[in-house]
Length: 107
Image (cartoon, rainbow, N blue to C red; front, side, top):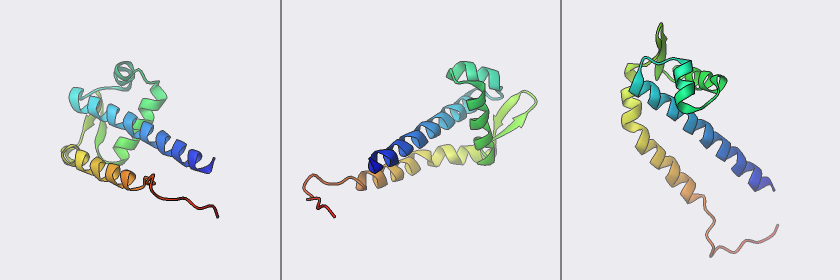
């Protein structure tokens, strides 16, 4: 049961990251863009979009302006390195798999 709880938390974090990235991509593609438009395009409630925007702003990827959100100069570097960083995380998760050939012994 404990392992499932750990995996559940990981899945939730992946879902949140996916939401942040979806909001970021829309800002990248349609900047400047406001919360209402982001909410409409993502089909997410305003409060979740607002939270994602706050996280992206804290990361230095977007900044507010009078017409909504725009990307920062740091955003391009983020986009250029994102796939490699995700691949590193995926590899680390893959290394965590317990091989079927490993015999688990009870404690």
